[in-house]
Amino acid sequence: MFLCRLGSRRGVKDKLRENSASQAKFALWFGVENVPHGDTLDYCFQRLDVDQVQELICRSVETLIRKKVIYRFRLLGVYFLVAIDGTGVLTFRERHCPHCLTKKLHNGETIYYHPVLEAKLVASNGFAFSLMTEFIENNDLTADKQDCELKAFYRLAKRLKQRFPHLPICLLLDGLFAGGPTFHLCEENNWKYFIVLCEKDLPNLHRSFEVAIAQLPNQCKSVKLEEVSTHLGAEHIQQAYRWAEDLLYTDSQNRIHLLGLIECQESRADNHSQIQSLHYKWVTNFTLTTHNIDILANRGARLRWKIENEGFNVQKNSDLNLEHPYSEDPTARKVFYLLLQLACIFFQIMQHGSLLLQAFPNRLRTAKNLAFRLLEAWRNLPVSTLNDLLSGKYQIRFDTS
Picture 1 (cartoon, rainbow, N blue to C red):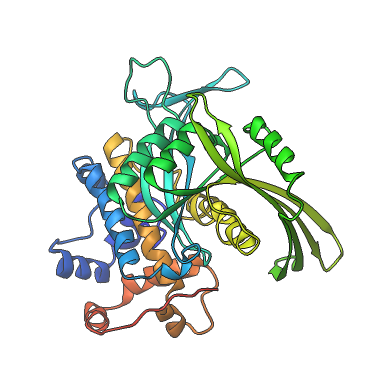
Picture 2: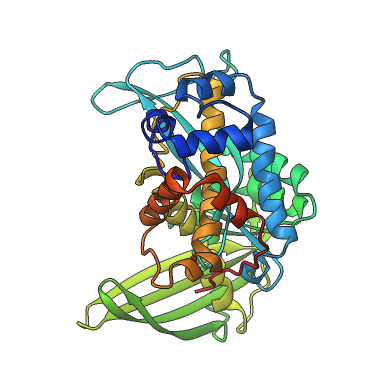
């Protein structure tokens, strides 16, 4: 359903159940007489253990790490980039279940919604693999406050450390997580981090940076990036960096943290001499030098947006239909969500793999075309042809562009 972008459980019935080739494959490979009905999936998933489905995703990414598939995308050849962010999945006008979060709009209307917090392993070539999911919901119905992203982050971080205790991780976070608890957690777990810092975040740290940078005239660097091609034409990018280390920050529990802060002023000029100016700040615990400052920013901190683009945006604004209510049952709903994440891992491996380029030298251009070809192959290729393909041995390499 997810790999072929069918869009809903009804798509299984419309595209697969009435297709003899699909029925034959299910009968031979899975020992069932027919393609399961969408309702059968729902009934089955209600009885599954969500943690075991989550473990399927963890093992899949763990295999890619152990097979060194994504080693080349590590920051400084060491750290795997893990972006963490929350997104809404389901929204209702009426209470969906006792665990719904509630929000009152400006017009007085109350909405009920189910968000999630995702930890995705991201890479410069476009990979955005779900590593772990934390569902944000009101499990304690007697609590004074609702569940939220920050509470979910602390739960997720604990699970992430338990499941991947020795993985060298660099967290990519937005300003919501800028604070003493996050700094302390990363220090305890021996994690690196980049946290986007807006002007309203940690005002004392901004002031400390301005005082320190006035005494560090040599801690600046200008970088001219190669021309970047966009849909608007070629862009010429100039970056000016300033940075300071060992900035003292005392949190609400009187714990002292030594932080680094990177500032980047970026100018983009297109072929029509239209100039766009951008300003970024990140707080980090990396050692900052003239040699690594632009590498840390461009190959590390800047990749946080990939969880939004290659991650949530793709899953919401395509036939994956992340915001579609695949089930009203709370357990089945989570299983459908996790299987969508697992399908996205498989799909990205196909999309970036060398076997696809061998089969389609002119490329398929869009993910939608790949999903369509996959669906038609499943619906039309006889079992014998697929068995011949599966019996072969192939070496898969991945696009690094």
